[in-house]
Amino acid sequence: MEKYVGFGLVKAGSLAVTAVAGMAGIGMSAGSPDVAMAQSSGPHINAIDDRPAARLRRARDMETAAPSATQGLAPTLQPQTPQLQMPVAAARPKGAPEMVVIPPGTFMMGSPLHQRKRDRNEGPQVSITIDRPFEIGRYEVTFDEWNKCVKGGGCRRYRPDDNGWGRGKRPVTNISYNDAQSYIEWLNKKTGLTYRLPSEAEWEYVARAGQPLPFSTPTGRGISALEANFNGKFPYGPGTIEGEYKRQTVPVGSYPANSFGVHDIHGNVYEFVSDCYVAGHAGHPGDGSPRRDGNCDARIIRGGSWVTHGYQMRAAKRLRYTMDHRYDDFGFRLARTID
Image 1 (cartoon, rainbow, N blue to C red):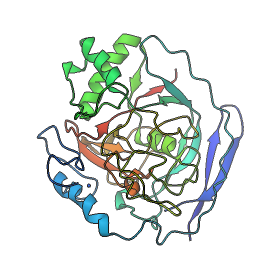
Image 2 (spheres, one colour):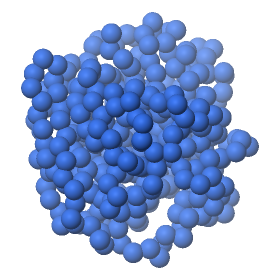
Image 3 (cartoon, one colour):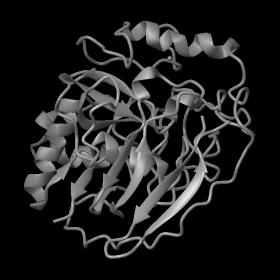
Image 4 (tube, helix red, strand yellow):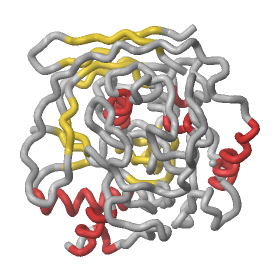
C-alpha cells in the first residue's frame, strides 16, 4: 500500500490548505539520435555510484526488456488537489524572462522506499517548509534568450550546438552548470534584478505542484507522451500507454502547464539546480535553501529529458554532474527571490 502524507500550500497571511493523497511510487552508439551526447571532456558523475556516462546511457536501452512500470503499484487514487489563489507576478523589466510566482507551503521531499524505480539517494523523505513566495521561470531558458546574452557580450560568447533541431523557442541545450551561471550574471546586470538557479527543494516543490505524488500531471501518479517530451515508449505509472519518442527537444510550452503554471518541469531538458551534491536528504535544513555542505564540485540536475524514460522524470529523481559538463539534454530554468 502507498503511504499517505499531507501537502500544505500556504498563502501569506492565511491558513494552510492541505491535500491528502497517495505517494506513488540511458541510448546507443555515438551519433545515434537515441543518445544524449556530451560536449565536453570533463568527468561525468552519475547519481549513485560514479559509473561512466556511457554505461548510464546504455542502461536506458537495456530497459527495453524491463517489466511494465504499472506492475507493483497501488491502485489509482485521484489526489485531492488544493484550489490555490496564486500570487500575481511583478511587472517584468524589458528583456526579463517570463516568471511565475510560487506560493509558500510545506511538502515532503524525496521518495518513499516502495516507489518504483526509486534510487537510494532520493531518501530519506524530509519535510520542507518554504515560508516565502518566490519566482520560477514559466519555461526553460531558450536559444532565443541565450543568443541575446551572447549578442550582448555575455555568456562567455559561447554558442551551444542545437544538434540540427533548430533554435528559437527550443530550450537551450549543451549547457553546463557554469554556463548557466554565466547567463545569470549577464541577465542580472542587464535587468538590475537578482536571478539565480532554483534550489533543489524549490525545484521539487514546483515539480509536485500541490500533489505528494511522483508528477504534477493531472493524476500525479503517472506520465505519458501526451504530457511531456521524453522517450514515450517507456511511460510510468498505472493506466499509461506507450507513445511517441520524438528524439529531440521541442519548443518550450508545447505541453500543458502544471497547476502552478509552469511548463516542461518534466522532460524536454534536464535542469540544473544550485545545490552542492549530497547523497541523500539526511541533514537537510528543511527551509528550501540550497545545500552547501556536500560535494560542491558536483551539481544536481532534475526533471528528465527528451531521451529519458518516464521514471527518470519523477519529482524525486536526482542525478549529479561536474560543473563544466555539457550534454545535449542539459538546460536550465531560472528562479528569483522576491524582495
